[in-house]
Length: 187
Image 1: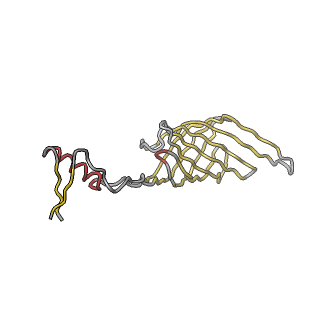
Image 2: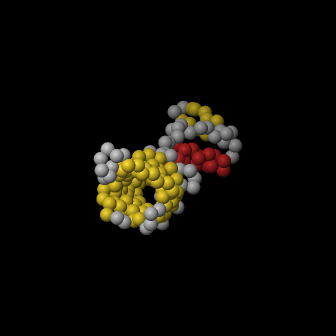
Image 3: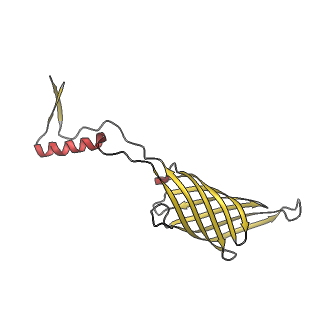
């Protein structure tokens, strides 16, 4: 079976062929993005509440919120100049929380963290990326953080980790017909 393209002009035929090749797979598909991340952040505590539970000596629980900005320490675009918010919860020696990174386009990355060691003013722990929105939908990864308390409300944070973002869903595998083009089949 032979296929013949009938186009208004040879120049347009070449352009249409180039578009068809690109749409039909002549160009590589979007690949998964992954890499290492080194974030440097400045954060400020914006609210804090502590409660003495009273069921035993010095049993205090606390909830705090911090807000700030994170920069990509390697100058790469991943989470560079993003808003950085933390919701922290502690119950004595147990301290966990959630990190939210928001880029200027509204894309978000969410992470859960656990404090592993506190020798004031240094705090060390681990985090895991739990999801994202926009260009970060489906993100996974993990890493470590190191917070240094500068005052009662200010701190800096260094984050080292790795991440993986799945490739965007590909479109239809059948390209649409170009306007003004017809096909005929012959033997």
